[in-house]
Image (cartoon, rainbow, N blue to C red; front, top):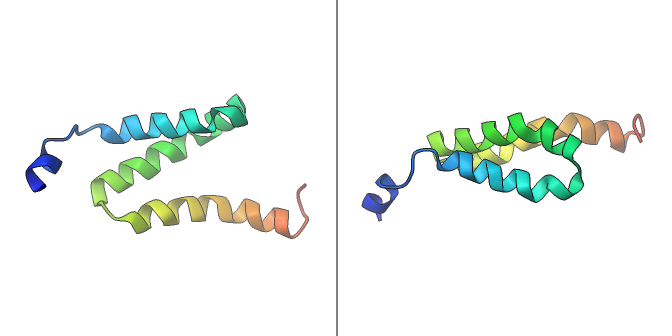
Length: 76
């Protein structure tokens, strides 16, 4: 298994980011444009650290301020 992991493509995080952007495409092109940096960052950090908590905490930190504003009815 370790040998199989070593032979994978080094830029697989780019392919994974592209697939996530395709998944978000029905929500609108403006959202896709806004998500490009965070999608690249999440998959790049995960590919370098191989730690799932990094992939979970980055979107949590990115989305928390907006969720709080919506929950407190500051934004609609």
